[in-house]
Length: 143
Image (cartoon, rainbow, N blue to C red; front, side, top):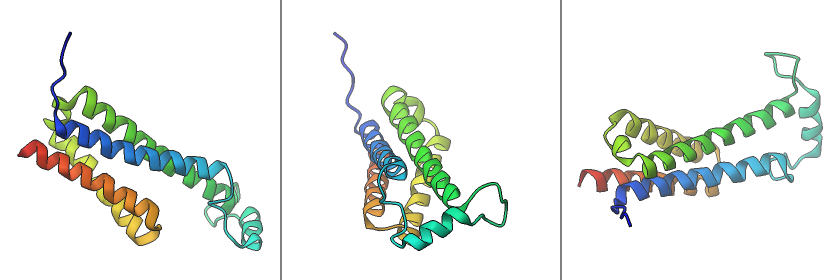
């Protein structure tokens, strides 16, 4: 029977990634199911379905809105999958790479900024938790 060494830093990064993955999965669900991401004003919703952005007449603001929300979710899902996998399956490689560690931290810091500036408390708090877990992993690794 083989034993796997417990490395808290790896599990903290994985936990951080899973928080972002969960937020992305919920966001994707809300993008296509229900009305949570629709405007409260039905007139605005109707206008979004009619009006195109200045960049092209090939889509509507509503279709762009749905696409932006879905692609945003895909980014969170990808980050969650990749960083959880790297942390758990290739922890030595992840923690030996300043590049990968920096990319992860920068993405979380970017999400933190966006969450505080443009979103609402639930995703912001989730992102803060993910960022705190990630920073704790870095501290645990370097300690």
